[in-house]
Amino acid sequence: MRYRFRTAMAVAASAALLTSVAACSSDDDDSATPAASAGTAISADRCAKNKAAGEITYLSGYQWQASASILEYAAADKLGYFKSLCLDVKMQPGTGDTSQNTKLLASGKVTFSPVSQQDVLSANANSIKVQGISSYSNVGLEILMTEPAITDLKQLNGTTLGQKGAMPVGVQAMLIKAGADYKSIKQVVVGYDPTVLTRGQVKSLTGFISNEPNQLKAAGKDVTVWRPYDYQVPGSLGAMAVNPDFAAKNPTAVEDVLRAGLHAFEYCETNAAECVKAASDLTGAGYDEKSNTGIWQTEDKVIRDSVKAGTPLGTIDTANVSALAEMLNTYTGTKITSTDAQAEFSSEYVKNIYNGDKLIWPAP
Image (cartoon, rainbow, N blue to C red; front, side, top):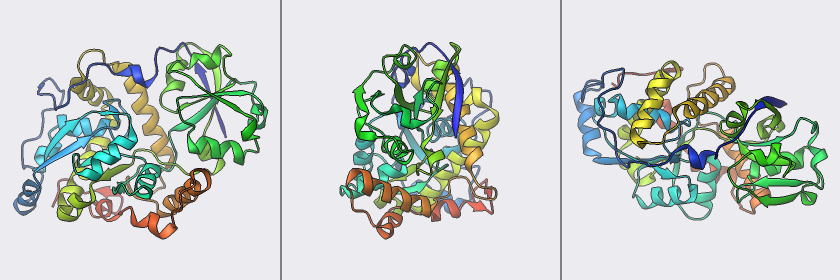
């Protein structure tokens, strides 16, 4: 399936969405909703366990961009959800370097971080031990964009493809599945200005479904967005990982960090502007609230369109994990068995905070 977007002039992509960043939680009190009071959403016994877990560091993926698994955690902090569950959470912005996030997680320098399921698998394959604990969707963020004249990916044979320094494995798999002659496609590294596509400097361009198409949309030029998911290529969106040692020692804290994030996710679906303001407060000057609201709303729609009815949001799809391992083995040379892949994820934390498909709030 192909998606058509009216697209526009680009400023810089995600690298320019956020500028000066603060490392810790904002103390602003101008949120539309008063913050919850400490310890008000949890039993005394469970509160004591969460307090015993000590300081928890949440490291975002890319700064405080309003992506799923980032925005709702910024909002959970602002709304007081962590404190209401007796959790001491320090908010720290990431640089967008996923490999660095997994190393920090494995070392215990940070406790939680948004890490795609494929990156969890790759990290563990390289003896960087992290544990996947939730994922919102099997639809990956990575996409390929072309001009509307391209109606079949085989038309890209012998053309130039722009990428940001590394070819997304899912896009590579999609091209090959679609019958394109992948080896004939010349890859060039481009910057964060997607108008290289609309100006004809490249014939196709990799990107993220919630970023470049939204940036380009305002200018009113047609591009076609190709999603690997529509070619039965596995992916993940909004996935979360934890330090395994912390999780083993503090299972209730892991559950309740997820509980707070998922509770905030539901809140942000109907209060996007307020949640984006929470991320803006963490960032400081230069945060583009309009663009980031578009990022959040796009990803939320992708998630809701792909989650099966009756499935708790955040549930680990073990079949998808196995498919991702197989894809990585095929295209990156890893040797991950399905059994090993599934052992790197735990569905129990999400399972324990739901009653059917309804999030349990407050905590028991």
